[in-house]
Length: 115
Image (cartoon, rainbow, N blue to C red; front, side, top):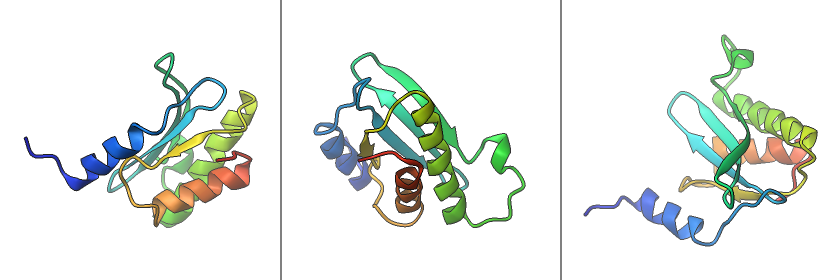
């Protein structure tokens, strides 16, 4: 069984981080083209809200991927504030806290999420 380094990091992070309805887990998935973020309640196994760069709002945008990731974080924070969610735990999903992942986190913090 071959497990990549990213998966090892992911498992190591996931065993420490748990999300609840009061303090959900902000999970980030980064592909080559898009970035996806969602707030997850692990106790009930439910996604509370989500945002991604694949949404219609970002189609045809000429901004850089880092700028788009920041906007995705801000959009997710505004959706979370509509659900009265202020605190969350950040799950970088095995990615390094650098580049688009860092930009998304900064955008979410600017939008009002605390982690």
